[in-house]
Image 1 (spheres, one colour):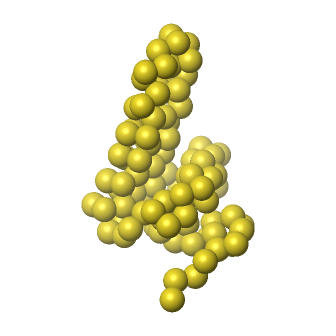
Image 2: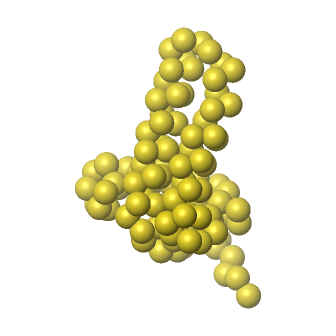
Image 3: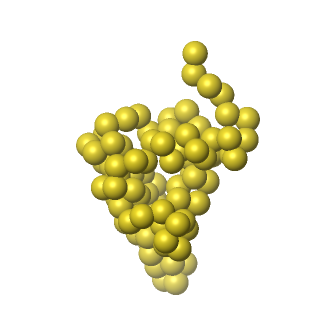
Length: 101
């Protein structure tokens, strides 16, 4: 039976275990950076219709990383909120050098 996580602090070690492949993590960082760029572009130009690109670039890069390189099922299918939080924590930890890029 699959474990159900009741807190993000319990979930995050599992999340990291699903991102051991360096290419998968790099694709997550690229996708997250593009999400921020698209968001800033949409706000800066008030092109609100461009916001539909956010899940496409964010999940697109991440899912390629999971299916092609990590060869696992993205945790977002089971834990969408915790996975979103985990992605941004992992992104920050990568940018600050806590996790290798």
